[in-house]
Image (cartoon, one colour):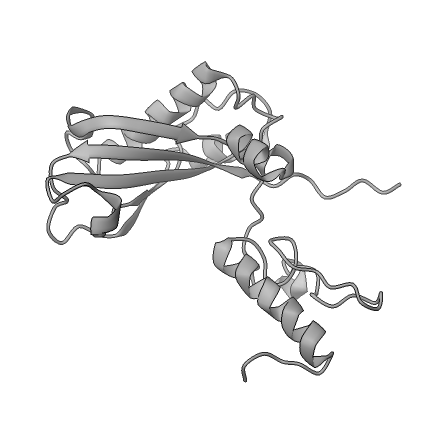
Length: 200
């Protein structure tokens, strides 16, 4: 029996409800990079509790559907982390400590963040695993071109007649949009046959 591929990293997400309006002209998406990339990579791909300050993606959509009124703002923070298992993300202290470091990173972009904070919710790879069944709460990465094809995912059609693959671990790779495209590709192959090449 060959061992399966390693469990990919997961995501830690912190949903924030803030008092005060979103600043006019605020960017929808900003990445706040880790001050020590080596420590971050060791934390993502190594063993033990995550004690580093992560790279954090800060999402600040100008969307009235995600806030009660103009006097509030909804912000989402995400960071790539080790999967559940290598880190015990079910441990509340681990999750809370990491969320605090994410808030520290975001505060450089959102001065007074903690003073504006009404409530927050933390979602870890343990939550992802529980909700989706994905081992370790791992989230497959998008496919990267180049590298002689080393970063490509398995094709949607297989040598076994009638077996098609869809989802984050099949072409074109991880992420919600890519998983949807993967399903569309598999459906196109089923309906139109092996010569189907999408909406060219």
